[in-house]
Image (tube, rainbow, N blue to C red; front, side, top):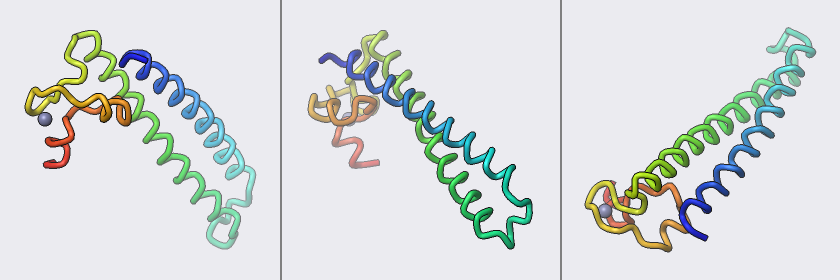
Length: 112
Ligand SMILES: [Zn+2]
């Protein structure tokens, strides 16, 4: 599997995850409207608020992941994919397999 296929696959997975999370988020928000407005004295209200912030954080992560994946796909187009942005060395294939959106080689990444 080449870099583009790997990135496209990861993008599709992330999109699916994001769609699922968005659905969950909307369900949680809807549930919080249905529940008693008296959150402070309602243990269920507090749980819903907690779930909402958890799901919100996961959605942010997924969106950031998608942005990284599109940036990596642009690098594939530009022919600069897999080249370390700091030292200009080729990033190892093993690292790109584990982390297709990597911008730095393992040496530079460990120095950050
Ligand atoms: Zn480097």
